[in-house]
Image (cartoon, rainbow, N blue to C red; front, side, top):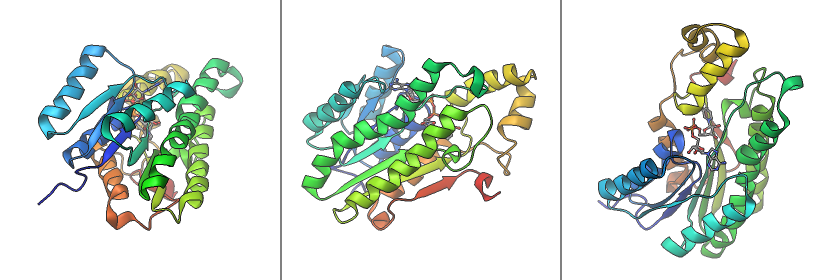
Length: 263
Ligand code: NAD
């Protein structure tokens, strides 16, 4: 049997680590060509890229676009179109976090979070949609967060950006609904990746308590299952959203949060 995504091409922003890398690997496993993006050590990035090609027999490329720079984001999409012939699936995943009371929130951190977590999805979608419209098929998958639906204190920029991503998702979904394109968001609860590792340290500082207590009493406090979400399980939702069975799923968000947002 052929692979589900053979012949498709996928761009995943922020795919040098964590959820983005998991999603890129999952699509490659389904036979898609993948464009990696993100920060990191060149040798480690090259190892991920070459590893994907070897393991899955697809084309994997890397583009170092900085998600705070609109022209670089447009070039990321253009380069993928040139390398693969198309961008059929765009996964807007890059994201950062900063934890601080709002009246002490560093202005540069606010600006960076809005740029990377929200505006980069606009710039990449803006660049990828014309090709999708021309081909009459496309999937935009935005990695939002439980924090796109509900809030936590000390995360004003992140919560604002992720709520913004969900609004953006709905608006673009309506624009393209008749064109064979869908736009959806995934809202994970806590997944143990470097972004969460860093929050454990930050929260330990803000609350003045040890790491173990942060994990139990702060990080997993809102997640009723008391378990971290798995990267692979987030990736499985992305694959489903890109599959033919999801053709009528449009403009919505799918939660994977151990029950968090049921409260
Ligand atoms: P991560 O830190 O492992 O990955 C973030 C990725 O974004 C990395 O590849 C990093 O290099 C990239 N990135 C950061 N700044 C960038 C920039 N300026 N330009 C280009 N790339 C940049 O974190 P993760 O947990 O895998 O997060 C991925 C997404 O999932 C984020 O949008 C995050 O908000 C979201 N999310 C994570 C969790 C979680 O618990 N881990 C929960 C909900 C949502």
